[in-house]
Length: 132
Image (spheres, rainbow, N blue to C red):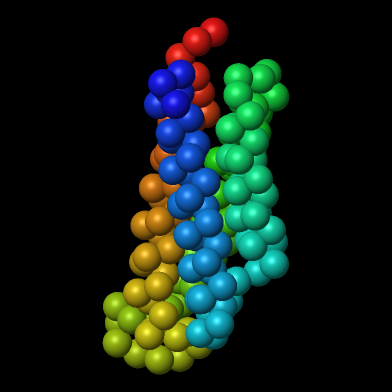
């Protein structure tokens, strides 16, 4: 573990946050929220891409980190785009087409998604080990 750098830990945090995002998506969908299969697939792809970063400094692991960040961004924006009515109706105090009681989950998924994207970007641009 002494040979690991900040990029490795950022990738590890990103992988954990991507798993948390996926679990939140399942919970959100179970409560009636709209989550597309593409968003769930993108979250799973992001977990796989970030896990590939643990294999060490290889030329292709830089691309898997970038792909993971893109997948996380797609998943987050897809879920938030589908849940915008929940947030709007919660703010306005009305009920029309969304589920305002799910707005808290939308905020939570947005927060976890934003932090995971930021840590994924850090992992993209930093080395995963101290030796090279």
